[in-house]
Image (cartoon, rainbow, N blue to C red):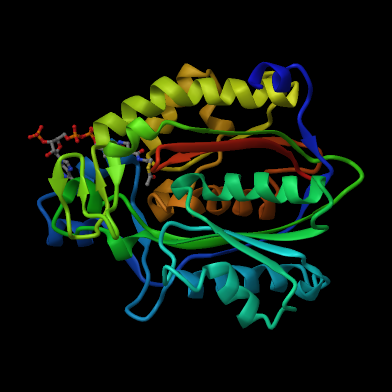
Length: 334
Ligand code: ACO
């Protein structure tokens, strides 16, 4: 199946028509963490590049972040009418509830008709790229003309603030994209992958609390950082190659690289390995920390708004995270 797909260019008659983003007001700096755990600004910056993270307030949840990002999309694109969308796809590993889903909560909040499809996907840090791929598929098969793709995560709600090896890494936020039918395909090379054996390196228990030979009833995020780092370095270059093959492109054809902004040092090493210039890589990790599904929109949207990303340019999106799962594509900015 893979080889057949790789012999033809995979594209979708779809484009991103509008974008929105939001990060909560509350900020935690490295100095704040120096007061909470045995760490230092120097260690955090040297190992991760993170300087600040925006984190949810006491009464703020992923649905609030998602709504704020959609409101921001509407504020930047006043001609968008949400009552014309056919589907809502939300990528999040930190929904307010098991159900109702975030997508159904958005349908209710914006009083959208009852025939809107609403689906949440649990693909961790691959959520935004995965959401775009699913939206492209829905549009390509005629099930939808307009899909609202939202990534929303409040990972700090499931971080162990006594574990210095994880608590300094994460932040919260949301991003939204309106994907619509277009006669000129602008989403290419949609690809996805999984390595469930690596799930033991990054997990959060739920109904089932025994994992990896241990009982963890905390329901907090647990990560074996070095193992994830190694997995990314060994596997992500192959996933990038698959996306390019499916898009019928070479790395030289790519104007901007937007990988999951998990760790600046890891992205620098990844860029060296590909190789791709770090100067043309879109990042959000320094200001926002690792925001899971949201890290790509938080990097992409400022670059679109400040004019770095220009119409006609190609951006390679590469999401990867808990599962372990990956999703990626090449979008042409229109
Ligand atoms: N401050 C000070 N020291 C620390 C801290 C901290 N915050 N955290 C760990 N240390 C110490 C450790 O205890 C260890 O000390 P020791 O040598 O005395 O035992 C030392 O620093 C080195 O620890 P490592 O875990 O080996 O540190 P490493 O260089 O691997 O950096 C990190 C850790 C930043 C987590 C790195 O492994 C990483 O980024 N991994 C990838 C994670 C990732 O990308 N996840 C993204 C995908 S999934 C998702 O986004 C949800």
